[in-house]
Length: 248
Image (cartoon, rainbow, N blue to C red; front, side, top):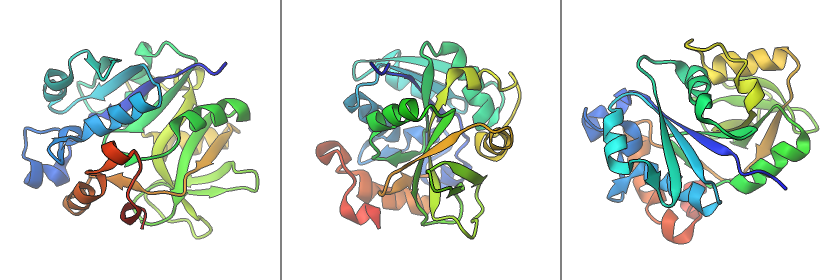
């Protein structure tokens, strides 16, 4: 029987590009979407898929997140991993892993929403015996991780925020990882998962599998995308899927 993994949500970014829209005292994951914090959408998605323990990796204005959610949300246990200085995505995952009790861990970005089958992702990771499984979506933009797959669906090239000519897919920023692999990341070290660790692991012969999702990844990282997200995500809770206009 597949074990329900713990979850790490990376929520420590400064959100500099959004400050002119949401103000300096609101951390990016708490940016309002249809009158509620964006983070609630992620947590409710996890609840729908049966997850039970979530570690929020927080930094900038972390007290705002703590005050709103406390130690539980929607029936799930919440824990906090606090970055006192920026650690990058890889360093943040490594630090948060001390709170992970399961053999595998689901990692998500706290500023993007993808309506992927998270239960299916967990099963795929286990069945493929992969070291890492990455949710990959059709290529639609140039500032996300571009991935090239082999004929078996394994990732052979990963280039963060650069388009690779033969690539047809982008990373959605959702990963399944074995905890033992996470524990090989140097502690208290600033390192990027996407720019540093993934290319390193590929060079070392680690298996990084792609889980293809044909929908969209909606992020709120810029004022333009944040405005678009308001319209795309406002009905997610009631319909549990992205509207068709959000998949274009």
